[in-house]
Length: 58
Image (cartoon, rainbow, N blue to C red; front, side, top):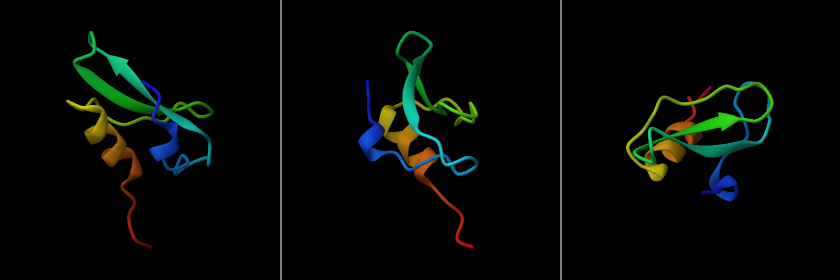
């Protein structure tokens, strides 16, 4: 599944990220293509995207 249009750039390097399926399509993570930073495994693609896109207000 490719949800790159919905994903913010990597908060560490600004790189492109993508949703990756793990554990036989029961869990999903978002991972940066450049620095390999990623989220914890989530139960849905929507939850993985929400975790990735969450940012702390400066």
